[in-house]
Length: 109
Picture 1 (cartoon, rainbow, N blue to C red):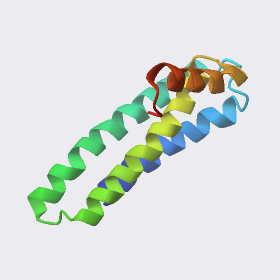
Picture 2: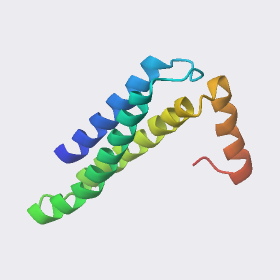
Picture 3: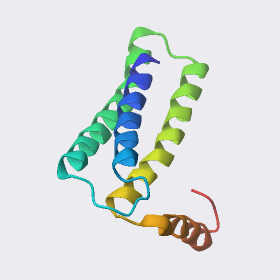
C-alpha cells in the first residue's frame, strides 16, 4: 500500500500544481509545469504497475490492498482528466466534453 500511496501522492501533487497555475483551466501554464506533470504521470503509472508485483512477491497481497489500489486508480483517473483539461486549455467547456463523452458512449467512463 505504500507504493500505491506514493504514486498517488506524486500524481496528486502534480495535478494540484496545475490547478494552482490555471484554476479556470483556460490559461497556458509554463512549460516546466507540463514537464513536471509528464514525469509525475509516468512515475504514477510505473508505481501503479509495480505495487501488485511487490505485494505478491512479499506475500502481502490482500483484498483490502486491491480495493485501495483500485480506489486510488479511480481517483487519479478523475484528477488526471482535469489535468488534461488544463493542458488543452478547455476552460469552462471541459464539463461539456465530459457530457459529450457520456452522450456518445451511453455510460459514464
